[in-house]
Amino acid sequence: RSSVCSRARLRLTTRLAMASLGNSGATSSPMVILAPKTKTKKKHFVQQKVKVFRASDPVQSVFMWGVNHSINDLNQVPVPVMLLPDDFKANTKIKVNNHLFNKENLPGHFKFKEYCPQVFRNLRERFGIEDLDYQVSLTRSPPVRSSEAQGEGLLLNSYDRTLVIKQISSEDVADMHSILSEYHQHIVKCHGSTLLPQFLGMYRVSVESEETYLIVMRNMFSHRLVVHRKYDLKGSLVSREASDKERGKELPTFKDMDFRNNMQKVYVSEEQKEKFMEKLNKDVEFLVKLKIMDYSLLLGIHDVGRAEREEEEQGDEPPNEEDAEAENGLAPAATVGSYGTSPEGIAGYMSSCKPLGPGEFDPYVDVYAVASIPGAPQREVYFMGLIDVLTQYDTKKKAAHAAKTVKHGAGAEISTVHPEQYAKRFRDFISNIFA
Image 1 (cartoon, rainbow, N blue to C red):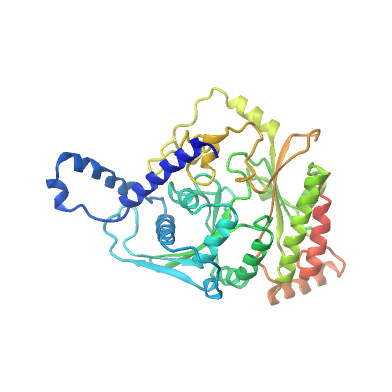
Image 2: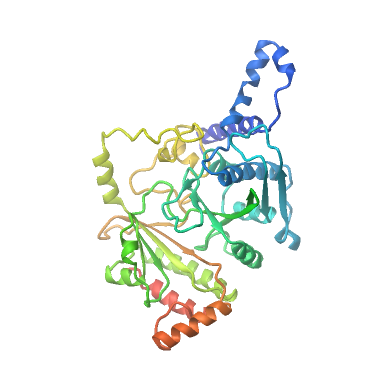
């Protein structure tokens, strides 16, 4: 990469080092007051600590603090030559009491636990994500609540929109542990080229004896291109239609019947379709082997023409200043892609190295993106990846399958079927979404 990038990254490293110093919790000793003026100036950046890790929610603040702490700790640990079985069971825990130095931002007592740190470090590397970038994306500014968030669980986007932080249950943590070793092998085998979710870290945050489990994944959608339409496809047509309530949302999640009724198609080249189906087949075989079912293909569509029109309409309108001051006194997520020359997190180096035009994306950051073929009815960018891959075909599913068969008849295309049957139907449906 160009020297601009290297210089920018060096600046980022220095800034991070300063921020972590400012966050180390050391109280100023009386010596500082007696020291000559020049030295006091040098110490000035310690004042930054007040601003660090403040989110509107204590769980988020502790999460940011914990990720920062765990990455700094990992940096001190040499990368093992190979992962051992124990690494898939390991965890690190830290308990903090009477946290006086930063109490306006963090609760007085909290616990932070990271699961399988060496395994997730290895996965991040295989997905081409540097720990420093991961750390900045999650801790430079508070994560933002995602518009996808439904019901109780937290669903957040990192401030630069490259990562998703999802609240999961303790059962999901157990399920994740049960597949982690096979998942890691699969990622090694496919050299990180997969449609499966890219799992990057798993944590537990305890605040006031309430435990919150969080998993971090790469965002399947773009950090800069808006998704205008979205589908969740399972290859089943029974009860697979968006409800009226869903349709009322700003960005509804449409389903298989809607896809069919809208005459929707994905316009990509024959070569891209082959590449995509090859990845899909490998990933689905892996899921069948683990007796996993009920997963979906998440399809997001960015309409380039519409985005251009919307940009023109906004044209000279001044940006809305109300939200411009984020809680950390840092620029808000909306200014994504305009960081000047300083890379900030996973997508950061982009704007300093290569400004992107309408509908353009960087395949290293937007790894799930495919552009429509020239001559397609509309210029579009598609984001396609597999989601909900932790449901195993257990007794609960078997019972649901029996009940649905009674209701809809044995031949009906219901979504709760044996993993092999589910996979075959899913693949057949997905291979037909292409024009």
